[in-house]
Amino acid sequence: MKRTVRAVYPGSFDPITNGHIYIAERAAAIFDEVRVSILVNPQKHSTFSVEERHAMAREALSYLPNVTVDHFTGLLVDYLRQERSRVIIRGLRAMSDFEYEFQMALMNRQLAPEIETFFIVTDPKYSYLSSSVIRDIFQFGGTVHDMVPPGVFRRLRERFPPISQGRDPRRNGHA
Image (spheres, rainbow, N blue to C red):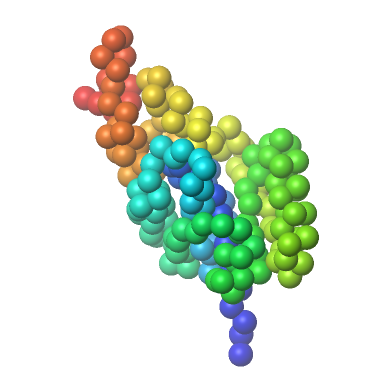
């Protein structure tokens, strides 16, 4: 009997970007099942609710048959145990990511030695992308339509209407 390997790709995904999707695609090509798991942190103010982030991620990843979307609160290692997973997926963009992710991987290993962390290096064209950068660029009138899935772009337009003073509404897809 073949053993199914389920990996968990955790993050805030506020919102999900094309860089996140790239990592999910790569993980889906390696593991039998990938669960994109949205961390619900009550101490952190998110731009989008967990329900909105869940819907955006589910829509953006719907073409990957072995990828599902979920959310969790609490320790990641507890969530992995609950989901019967032993694999954490983390994306790396730059060396600064590695330092932080390495510390987190060691802490998770201390808490749960049976759990492994797999790092997937992003495509260089996504190395500058982060959810916070996307939000900031969009709010100040920059173009982000090629950095996020269409559903995310639509929700950004709904959440952050164009600033009437000097912003060209066409730059963010407002025609």
